[in-house]
Every structure is written in C-alpha cells, then in structure tokens.
Amino acid sequence: LILAVSITGVIMDLLSSSLPINSTILRALRILRVVRVLRLFKKAKKIRTLLMTLVFSAPALLNIAILLFLIVFIFAVVGMNEFGHVKHNGVINNMMNFETFGNALLVLFRVSTASGWNEVMNAVSIEEPDCDPNYNGLKNGNCGNPMGARIFFTIYVLVTSLIVMNMYIAIILENLEQASLDELNVLDMDDFDDFYDVWAKYDPEATQFISHEQLYGFVNDLNSPLRIEDPTHTHIGELQVPLYEPNRAHCLDVLIALVHRCLTMMYSEDEIHDMKEAWEHVAASLEKRYHEAFPIRKHLGDPVATTKQRILELRSIILIQRNYRRFAMRRANKLGYATRNTGFPCRSKHRLVAVQQKSHDDHPHAD
Image (cartoon, rainbow, N blue to C red; front, side, top):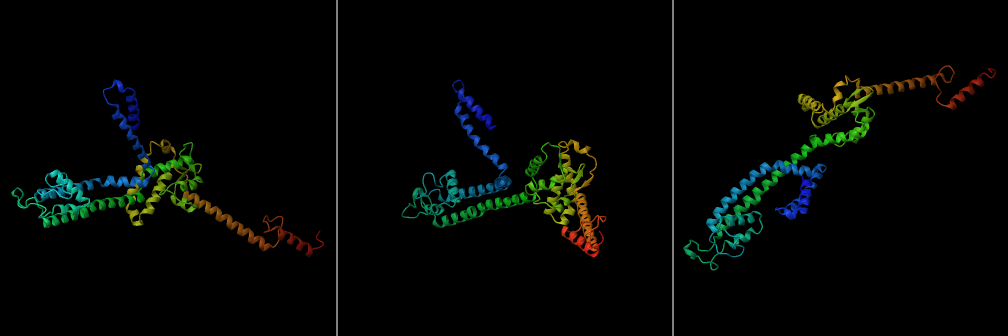
C-alpha cells in the first residue's frame, strides 16, 4: 500500500499540470513510508509486547476516559457557576476562564496535568480591593471565592491526577505483566516460524526428514522455548520422537514432541494430568493444520522405533561392550601370559615380552 501511494505520487507529479487534484496531497502521503519501520516489530519482541499491551488495554482505557470526561463535565459546570464571573487576572484571561463551557474544559484540562493548578486557584480566589463585589449586581461581583476555590481544586486534583490518571497506569502495568507472562508461557507463531527456519538448514532439499544423529544439533540451534541447550542422549530419548526407515525423524513429529516438552516444563504433574485431553486436542489440531503441508505423511506407515528406543539400544550396546572388555581383561590377567590360541590380547606389549622371557628362563631347552 505504501509503495503504491509513493508510485502514485510520482505519477501525479509528472501529470500535475493536467490534473485538477493538487499533487502536494499525494506527496504528503508518501510520508507514510516511515510506517515501514513497524516491520521491525516482528523481530523486536519486547516492543511488540508493549504494543500488544496497549491494544489489549484499549477497552479498559476507553472506559476510564469516559469516566474522566464525566468528572470533567461535572466540574466544568460547577466551575462556570462559581467562577464564571471572576475578573481576569493572573492566568485567567480571554482563553483561560470559566465564562464558557469550552474555556472551562480547557482550564480543567490544564489542571488535570497538575501543571500550575495552584496559579489557577489563586486567580479565581481574587478578593477586594482587586475586584468589585458589586459588579453588575452579582452576588460576589467579579470577585472570587477563596474557600470554594480551595475545596473545588483540591477535590478535582485528587480525583483526576491522583486517582483516575493512576488508574490508567495500573491497567497498563497489569496488562503488561500479563503479556510478559504470556510471552514466557505460551508458544506463538513466531516460535513455529523459527522452528521451520532452523529445519530448512538441516533439510535443505525439503524431504521433511532429518536423521536421528542430526536431532542433537537441530534442537540446540532452536530459540527458546523450544530449544534444548547442549542436548544429551537422555534429552533426545525423553522426546520419544517416532523414527522411520532408515532411522529418520519427521518434521511434524519433532515439532509435536518439542511442544509437548514445553508444556510439560510449564505445568505441574497434576495440571498435566488434567490437561491430557487438551494436549490430545492440541496435537490433533497440529496434525490437521499441517496435513496439507505434509501430504506424504499419511503414507509413511508405522514408525520402526522411537528416539527413546534407539537410546536404550545404544546404551545396551555400550554396556555389552564394556562388560566384554572387562571379562577379556580379567581372563588375560588370570592366565598371566598370552598364547596364540586364546584370542585375548595382553594389556601391553611390555607384558607380552616379559611373559615370553619368563617362559624361556623356566624352559631353557624348550627351543
């Protein structure tokens, strides 16, 4: 839209002599190009949080604004009755006075900011001999009411500046706190976009699969809250991502596993148990949402294993190999020498030489 307005403005400049519309108007619209700065808010999460706070606070702020207007309206009417006849002095002049409703609103708006409200109060508290108490036959002439002015402005400042205005701040802070909590506890579309951006680095050909070994680097490269920093075999096993032949993980399965892990970390066990049905609904929603993006998923068949099973298999292999080495070492130590038929190596070359030398000394004629 901004680009279209800019191009239209350039065209209007070229055709300004033959058009009845002033091209200056369209040139002024090109100032809207500064709105492109708002695109930075997509990456600046903190600024976006502040903007969303203002958006969510708008209904409550509107209600307070209506309440403030009613208060100002009432005080403006009372001020016109009490101070509408006061002689111009000090800050009371042709514009700042209580003679008309509009001017009264202007005076009260200034007082609402707590900027020089005491000067206004002193101006409407004028007394003899600076005024005429018999002016036009009015009750106080063009003199003010010192006691009434003190009561009027004290109550008004307390209600507007110290109560109503602070209500604005309270509502904004409350919504900001809630928005900050939501940012920490809730996954949004930016997290999913980041997931697919990182996925594209590990799956540049868009096969929708990465190997089991690539999962470690993939989850470490993600941003919080989906990220698993420096993942171990235990971390990958706890995800329980289904694996398909040949030992590959599908994009959607990894995403669902990471989302489930985030929810598990955010809530207690009792809350997780209560949310079991809700989680099944979330998983089904993710499946349905990305069904069109992953058309081959329904043809994958059943997974051959999970990451947890693969980790258990790896640990079993390591345990078997470790025990076998210990068994071989104990047997070699028990025999005390190396033979050509045992198949078990000695612990070191020096020991083998020592064993051969001892055997030769004990049987010098064996050769």
